Length: 283
Figure 1 (tube, rainbow, N blue to C red):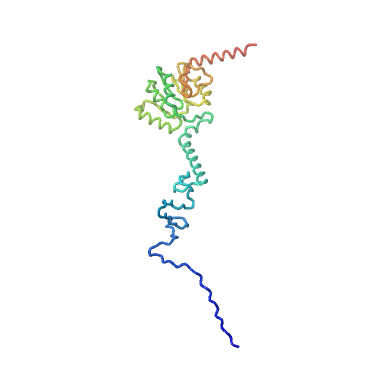
Figure 2: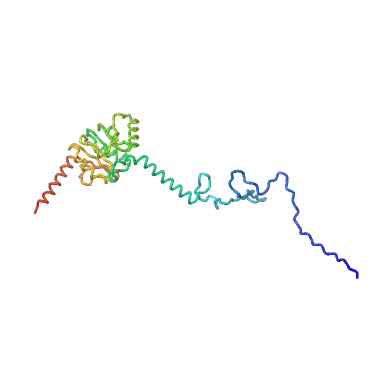
């Protein structure tokens, strides 16, 4: 029996697009990242606009802001700051503020009880002018208790209140005071001393300037009453002495200052004490 060899139909080869020849010198689409780039994403060439079309914006890379002009915290490297970076920035700012306090202001308070500590706050030009106006025409030794940067002592000396002293514990403020005196040409004429105002003897002072917090006024009033002569005048800025009646006052609000003549203060204190004794003896 004869056999016939049937020719199997050959399977058609899949149609493939013609392979284009890459021009010489052309770079691969996925160009390697430059050394040190630190990114694994391939470099994408910019899109080109067709004829008659407006230019297209550059392609956005992952991690870039979604909209032009979008607000973002930018770090030193140019990238946006995350929540952790913002927290680290806030902590660093707080540490810097604490360091400034520890270096500039704390040294003057270490030997003073907490309730008697007074933070430094510079007096305004108007406060200084009002305080010195209440001392105009007076003479004798003038002291500023807690003299800070020394501006009140210098102005007192210019006004003829001599000798003029400033008592301050903070060494940095003392350096600033000495520099101000040198710059004004009063070096060696005004005196800034590193002394605790609670331990200074004020029996020879005739003019006392006090720009201190309300918390120290009651104990300071006791010290002034015990040490100052009757001819002395005390000028208080920002806050008055709560238990004293001022002889005169000048200014309004934060610029207000009060003057107290010790003779009048003692007379009022004596009258108050006598009145209290009479009430106690009354049946």
